[in-house]
Amino acid sequence: MYDVAAGVYMHTAEAIVVATSRRTTTGNGGAAGLIGDIKAKIGGGGSKWFDWVWIGGATVAVLAVMFGSFTSIVPGQVAVRVNNLTGGQLTITQPGLVTRLPFGIHTVYVLDASPQTFSMHGAKQTDDLNVGELTVRASDGSNFHFQDTTIIFQINGEDATTVIRDAGEEKGYLQWMRPYVRSILRDEFGKESTISVSNPATFGEATERAKTRLNDTLGAHGVRVTQIVTPRPQFNDDYEKLIEERNSLGNQLEVIKSNLSAALTTRDRKLAEVNRDQNRLIQEKRTELESGLASVVAEQANNTREADTYKIAAIGQGQAERSAASQQAVQLRGQLDAEYRSRKAEIDAFKTQPVERVMERLGERLKGVTIAIQPWAGDASPSRIEVEQIGATQ
Image 1: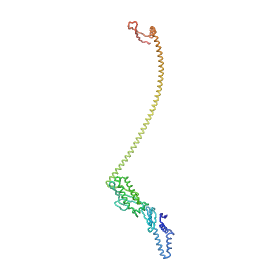
Image 2: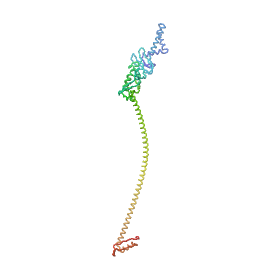
Image 3: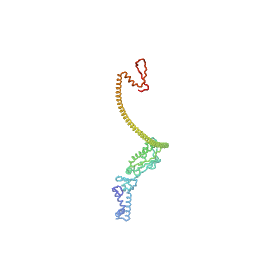
Image 4: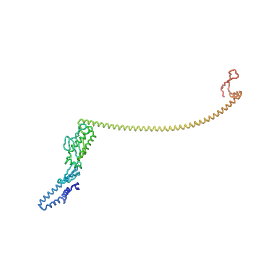
């Protein structure tokens, strides 16, 4: 049966008691009515004083049962109500009042489900939540410790019955924290060397592994680890000094890397600027050369065209002159042939002329020419005559 006022489920017998208790707390149908009913039942006998004793006793008994039938749940708590008759268990996670049947019928266990802190610090254990500091043996054989390790955990509200079953009443589950936390943290951090455990990245991985193992182990009992807070591991003085020196050198290395990165950035920027300027110069020079090449190509084309034109004109003119010269040569050849034939005819005709005619013609040609004849011999018929022209024209 579901009780709307309380917001919980309850058995029939429990509902009867709750109804009775509600009747005792309401106006005319409440405690006054119930007392009246009791008085009416016992009014037939005894004294008036005895009646009021019965009435007072019954009222006290009803009030005691009524107030003993409720358990208050505040935020951050979880309750488990056990029915001792049937063995049934009910987990209640909502804050409010939880009804409980009297006379051992119901038992209600209230657990703290709010986040709790388990700390490992100091030299010895003071209570279940404060134990001695954690010491770990690294994988390389060296020892280191944590001055203050904090584990934040809480009960899973839905698994409250598991917590009570495995740990019992009250805060028995707190006794699990010390052995489980110490052993698992030692295992996980012990897998690392002193060098790797000093590395925050590797250190964080070990912390996450430990958290996972703790949740796997404690989660089966209804407890959940939400956070593990561990400080930097502490070593002996010499090793601490070496760690500080290594951190200092690491910082210097980071500064060098930063400067190198800045130098590379500056170098890339300057190279980009030089490439930009050189590309601009190359582009300008290329434009200039392409313009000059275009001019030269145009000039070459113009010269080629002019040369072709001159060649065509010269060839045409030469061919015309050759043709004219050929024609003139043919004409001259004809004239020369004609003159040759005329002269030959004259010569042939002259050959047939007598000597007197020859001398006459020779005289005509030698008119105005003085001929000095000097005989070379006393021959009246000379065989050779030399003619010399002196200041006269032919």
